[in-house]
Image (cartoon, rainbow, N blue to C red; front, side, top):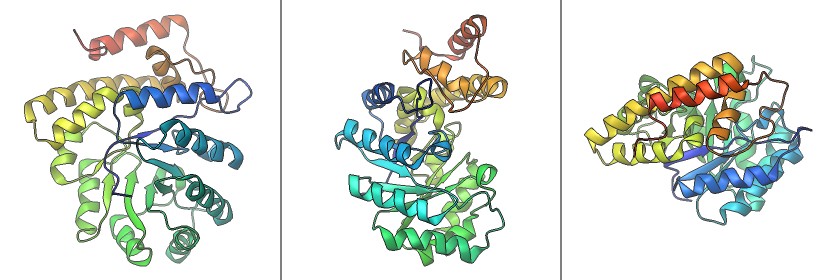
Length: 303
């Protein structure tokens, strides 16, 4: 596989009322992303609810994504879990069905894992499959921080590691990874699109940002303008992205991940259940307010 780049979409996993994967809606979301000409999909990450899904559900989500994409773009499968046995099981399944790469968060819950144990965790996957591996650095959820220097040591021990997805990823954080991994084929992917212009200038390979899953057209256009150094266009798009991101962040603080279900409904995709746990819902007044605030922030775009 050529190195991952551009606007890679972290896919949400929609559920039915019983907490089972809603394959029909999932396929509809994939088609929605494909119409926006995104550069790749990533399934079963934090946004995709992978850590709260059964292994068979995670496998099925990966299968459906690859079936629906039909080889049009790369599908990255997140296989992170607290135990290496489950990680290898999911990794081998991903390799079997044609995943382009694996994303792996460090083994979580036991946050006192030492460096040796974490390196061995990634080595075990590399021994099991030959797919490229991307580190998922999400200290807030995993309790483990793969710092830029640690990432360099990991790459030296596990050559199939090709990059990192940062849970958030400030410009400074991205720059630190790029500097530490200079000389390696190593891509950095911030988890927010709010500094895409600056990221492209310093050499990030793309983004893997939840906001882009709901507004893929906007984020794809922003990445292309940034990468091509179309500065005036990129600056205008970046400002709109920041305004919309502020609205999303506000609603996420209010109701948690339900905000994304409501955003998809605004885009015409009817999720029944997301996230996969009891969560506060918006009432009709709040839904109307959400649409109003999005319009004020620039969505849908005028004209």
